[in-house]
Length: 134
Image (cartoon, rainbow, N blue to C red; front, side):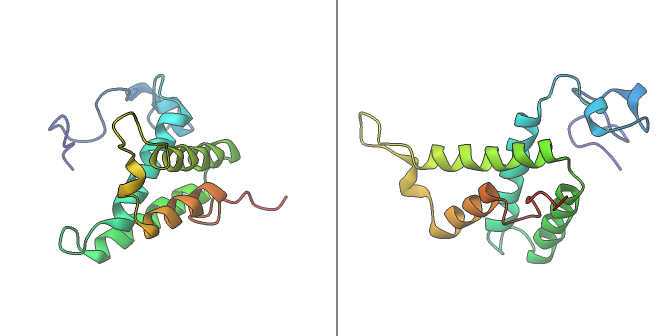
């Protein structure tokens, strides 16, 4: 498989630590990328695959990616799941911010299904983000 960002085979690019391949948790693979930033990426990916129009992406493909994300989140640590929930809360807060001095607010672009999605992620009800009972 060719890496889209570098054109090379395999995993490479910014933050990839080749010496850590196969040696342990994903945290070892990324130099300096926080749970927060990765959680933001996860939330944006979920938003895209959940809300993309069928004419832009095959629905079956979108479902496959969402199922993959859900499976990965099911294996995530409590700290990682908490970071994803917080990223969804932060994203929702951004959409719901008060209008600026010119009257603009992104809340006008937030559709009801998008809001429900972010609320579901933020509360842990969606994508297996609830901490398992101990």
